Length: 412
Ligand SMILES: *Cc1c(COP(=O)(O)O)cnc(C)c1O
Image (cartoon, rainbow, N blue to C red; front, side):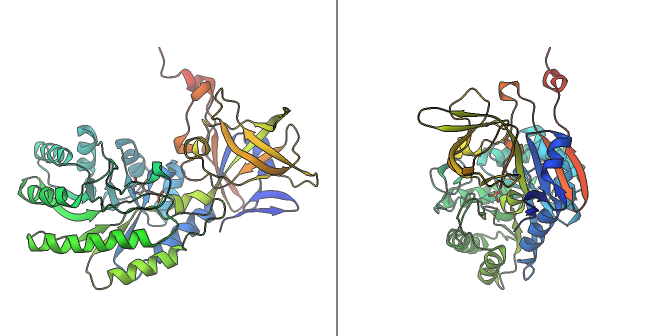
């Protein structure tokens, strides 16, 4: 569910007309709905109300400071993967004891920053990282709380680029290695192992892989118990999918019920790291048709948003629903919707049926709230889009459009 709807044949975000936003702020334009963000967070978080739990929103999905503030006000913790994301989360007012730090390549300065802030825990992804954290913590006279990210070797049945919990992936530790790593961790002076973690992939549309991973982790926890290691925190990562096209992922409520049932009576503090399911359908990308172009084989809609604005179609062959911002009655055309970038991989959609579009008209690309702006770049020296949050009747400029000065700001 989201709050992008037609009123009098004009697309609106909550109470605000998209056409008016585009006129005021220009295109390409990311528009997020505050009510949708709040509702998605609430639906997800309340699905776990039967468990002692913490919902740590995955910052990389959409890290705009105003988005983080909005979620922090709802009580969200945060899952971060860099010093930059730590900086954002703290600026957004997230208490450090609600922050967990994931990622395979944490550098010493990032570890030090997180220890200084006193975050809840590090999700450690290698033995090398464990020793690095121990050294940094020792030098600061601190004790680092850690989990190991376990690679449970389950197939999430998603796109290979967003599948993370199989043997061949770079993430986490296999159970054999993890067992030794916990033993080492217990002996290191500046480390306390307090949890277990896994994140098996993204855009999962069934619950089974989560349950399969959970079962493996719970039996692993028993083995650790026999070694005298007590696990209090269980971090199950993120990964719950959304509807882009015709996928039918489980509702967070159903997902929560299944996990709560499997965790009943286990006395674990459960951490969840949803990203896409919170932000994905809470945002659209608005773009203007620059030209229409007919070739002997194709009809192209050349729009002012490119792969530098939204890379998911190019990178993962992802489907994003597209519609016209102002409804029209013209017959449908089979379009390739492409950007201005000098790459054949620069497309938003292929063979898409839309009513005939004219130069200057607007399209909306849906499900762009997660892994949209955060993956954008300045490729082709294009200025990054503005980001707007609509909250009822209010419009918040969450990020102004870049300027040419911004483009050269850091260059000699
Ligand atoms: C990306 C990521 C998430 C969020 O994944 P979604 O599919 O957006 O829910 C959670 N945890 C970790 C460790 C991640 O890398």
